[in-house]
Image 1 (cartoon, rainbow, N blue to C red):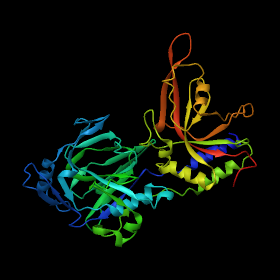
Image 2 (cartoon, rainbow, N blue to C red):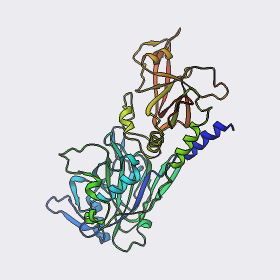
Image 3 (cartoon, helix red, strand yellow):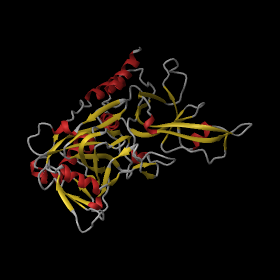
Image 4 (cartoon, one colour):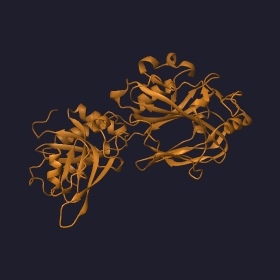
Length: 433
């Protein structure tokens, strides 16, 4: 391995892949654990305490719920071979639980350091009951809006066995077992887990009892003043200690460990920039995105909007590059089977252009910048700007489009692309430090 390739490997290994979730438990009391709900008899509403409910109480709640559906394409589907659970919509229940202090934890753990003061919009979405035999196979949450970035699940201390929440992302898997989280707590408490909405997850089969949960959608963005099921949680308003905890009696106890700081990544990128053979004429560093984003999809997507939604390691890379005075942007890296790569600031679609004789020229007419991937066997024979990939492109934000290829016979050509974070690098000897 050459010296420059070793430096690239060091950068990739230093990219911080902290877990895409945070979890812990928070105290609850009689007020925050009381649930009021409707039954078939509208004149006979019921209530129960989720800290002391009996099996009979929980079965009555289960009977008042409806079979839970799941999203498939543009439809809600009922298929108990895929999801077997009960649900209650927000119009049919009221609960005293207040997630404000947990939202403050989410802000600290799941947002990057530039956004830790940001207000988050919190929407109570559903109540679910998983009784014996219930489960939910692997899935990803359907974004309710383009600025949705996390889901929050509260698990009350109702007796049950099984019903673990498994999370999978980027070849890793984690298990959240609320009974273990609450084991040993000295006061009534609820377990919680918040995770990025694009993370695949499933609920394993409940073997006994009743698993009762509240689900919240967490957004970055404005608030609809007419929606009473949402509130804005602002760090300055909530506070960071017991005085801001409302009816939750203190700050949440966090059980997920954070990954190391970004200092190693910054040092390794700096080391790469100091190498004379690293993009000597200037060019770009390229980073594949590790997460999916609601703003991405279809023929139309807004890269500037996506830039505001970066999370996890994607956000940390942006933060480190900014600290090194490297100008960053999201770009669509597009190419065909026969063309060089191009960087575009918006989606490319040649399907309405008729027959395309020269794809490279069509790209350039759309404002694309033609680039060449660094090739260590042929580093000096091209005057095109170069890109050095420091982490691989991923399928989370891949893109494909078709066009009518020019030729003796009509045929379809394909454009392939990935949304990536790129950082502009000056030529050696003229780089800011």
